[in-house]
Amino acid sequence: MVLGIDASTRGSGGAKRHLIELFNNINPNDNDFEQIKIWAGYDLLKSIPNYPWLEKLSHPLLNKNIFS
Image (cartoon, rainbow, N blue to C red; front, side):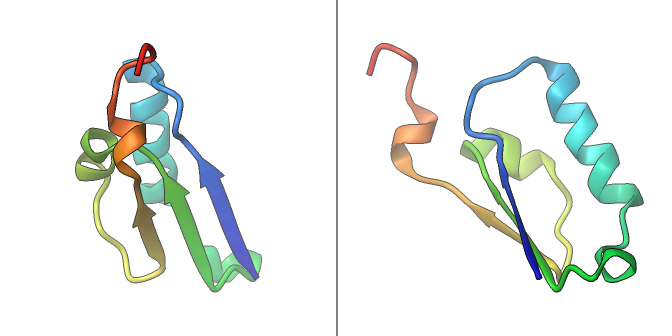
């Protein structure tokens, strides 16, 4: 199974920290996940460590401000 996480809205630093801690402490195989995909802006994706089971996805529009 594949898990998708939409982290495309700009959140607080707490949301960023929450995702980092989640990925540091999760073992996808324990929950029958083959892969986890996360959609977010480049800055957030750069702050999340790389894992073989984690696919980081972005789009240029996710990196613009709300008025774009």
